[in-house]
Length: 176
Image 1 (cartoon, rainbow, N blue to C red):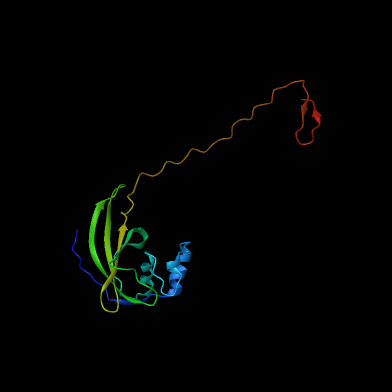
Image 2: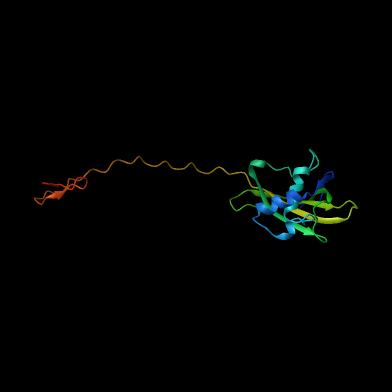
């Protein structure tokens, strides 16, 4: 485990009524608290702050994006949820790095990044805690065995009989 070592720059995140409503509709929620002029944000709405971050403000996790998983997301509110019309200031910090052995071999790397959301007065309003995981590189395994080419089964002759057969397509009788 390593101690926190990186912090990003703060950026402005305006809370817009229309965006709250769009987010609520995407969640298939028509709850009245998301509809009125001073609507509160749904609990996971704060993920949208990432879209407002200017280049270079976010803390880099340093993982290979081809092997990256978003393992967990948690929000902690330190009072009532933010409302439409408020402006928050978001800033990220690297809270923790650690490793665990992977089930398929190799080492999985974890990074926990905390985003603090503060109001205009600088009061901590909420925190978002995201856990990112870099999966281990695939290990070389034995070459898969190639399947033997299948040969066609020999056709068996139909039994000879003197009983008439019915042709399924035309319904006419035929001699065998």
